[in-house]
Image (cartoon, rainbow, N blue to C red; front, side):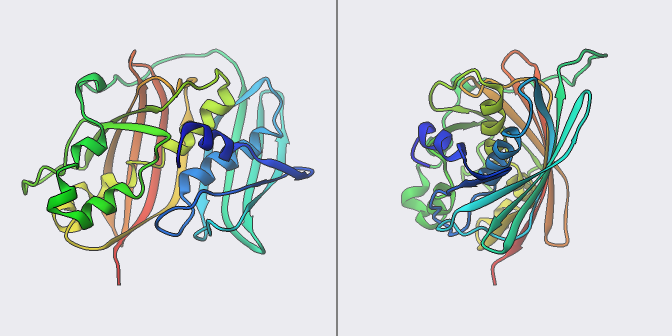
Length: 286
């Protein structure tokens, strides 16, 4: 992804029939459509059929087949229900005659109720941290194969500043926790729909790999295949994607060639913006 503008353009789908929307893909170095792209585009398709007074509060998606970056993706929206407070949509993404992804999303009118939230973790602020690129610069000469693995998935549209640097070279036992600050590389319009789509896109980064943190010494020496299986996202407050957000992730379980990870997204004021959960495939390449 070359820039924020190209990412926003990628999320802008073309309506080809009633409740049918088509989007393109960017050419990934690993030959499969990036899951975050499908998350953002499917939410874009669903939003196109939802009244303006309702915003997404949750989305749950399953990745069925690996998408082909050289083929367009067709998103078909099923208007499940339009209620007094909630609107429900189902979206299926197709390439040709094959479904590659399915998603259910729920949208709600703004309403008030009881409020509480968990506290933001006490971690270093983004201003004193290096970008993820800068943290692994030393690998370019010492371990070029690993350097390429870590950089080919990097989106130039989003800047990441990890709190923990796992690539210093020391061999230690690590707990399955990560904290990464991120923000869009440029100003984003104050449109909650676009903000949600960008957050859905970004939420697929740095999540599944948290399940590999305790096994990092071994995983970095081997060719390991990562792929998202399902992804759930709950929106609690409107994000500002051009301001720093903290992605606090943990992984309670890995086994059966799968890893399960959770994430909480906070703004710098400590407000909980979103919660995420994902299970994905983690296994050695044959």
